[in-house]
Length: 419
Image 1 (cartoon, rainbow, N blue to C red):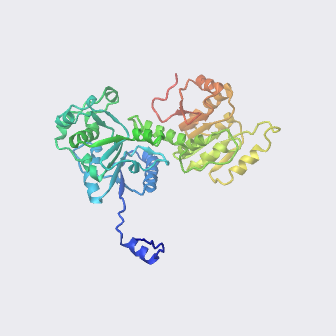
Image 2: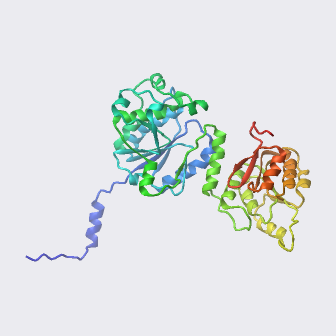
Image 3: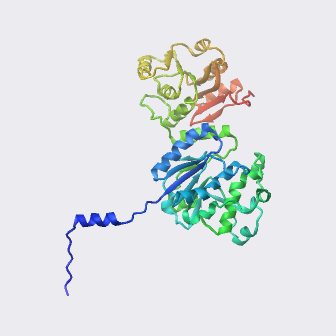
C-alpha cells in the first residue's frame, strides 16, 4: 500500500487551527518590599534596574508598600506574597530586596529552574542561627535562607506561608551570629530568613542556588549585587560605586579627549545628580566637566588658568568653551586655583572636584584652599599617583577611594577628621 503526503498548505485552515489553540501566557511577578519609603537615595538607583529586568523577562513589577502585619518587623511584610500570588495567579514569583542592584545583562532564572524547585542567591547553615524544631530536625538538610533574592513557582507557594507560631516563640529560636551582633542586628530583624528557612524544612521544598546555576551554565557573571553593610549611608556609597564599576547609568558619556575612564564619568554624573552647585578645579578640554554639568541641577564652575604649554596643547580654552556650549549651567572661571577659591564664601559650594596640577605642593594648596568652600564633598582624581597621595597626606585628611581612581573627603559625615 502506498501512502501519499499532501504537502500543500491551506493557510486558512492553519490560521483557524492556531486561533482555536489555547495559548497560556506564563505570568511572572517581581516583588520588592518598601513599606515606609525606604531609603529613596538607594531605590532611585535600584528600582530602574529592577523595572528594566522585569520588562526584559516580561514580568510585572510589584512594590509591597502597605503594612498587613503591623505587629511584626517590617521585613516580615514580604510574606504578603502568599496571598498576592494567588490573587494574581502567577506562574512564577521573584522576590528582590529594594536595595539590590540587578545588572542589565541579568537573564531570566525561570528558564533554568524546574517548577518543583525554589531558588535563593545562596544558602547558609541553618543551625548557626536557628534553634531547631521538629521541622528542621525531620528535614535534616540544614538549609538557612538568604531571602534577598528568591524565585519560586505556583507549585511552591508554601515557601511564603506566614508563621504558624507566635512571633515571640519564633524570635526565641533566632540567634544572630557574632558579626551581626557587632552591627546591632536583633533576632526580630531576621524573622524573614527564619520563616523561609523553616518553611523549606516544613514543606520539604527543593532548593537550588543562583550561584550553582551560574556554575552549571558556565557563566560566573556578576548579575546581582547586594550591599553587605547595615548602615544606609554606606549602602548609598557602595551602590554608587557598583553602578560606576558596572558602567551603568543614563549618562552616555562623551567623546571629549581626556584621561577619565567611562566608569569614572558615571561616578561623577551620579554624584553630581545629588548636588546643587559644583566647582571643578582643572578642566582641560572638559571630559569630566561634561559629566558634572550633565548631572548637576545647579551651577557648575570650571576653574582653569589654561597655562598648559601652548606648543603642546594649543587652543585648550577654545575647545573647552566649545565642548561646554550646550550647558546653560556652566561658568568658566579663568584663574589660578587658589586665587579663584577666594571668590567663593565658605560653605557655599556643595562639591569641589580637584583635577589640576598633580605635584605634591599643588595638591596640598588646592585642598587647603577649597576645603572650607564646600559643604558636602571635596574630591579629586588620580589617587594612584604618589604625589597626589602625599599632598593629601600633608593635609592630615583621611580620604576614601571611590570609582577607579577618585579620592573623596566627605564633610557630611561627622567622623571626617584629620589625623
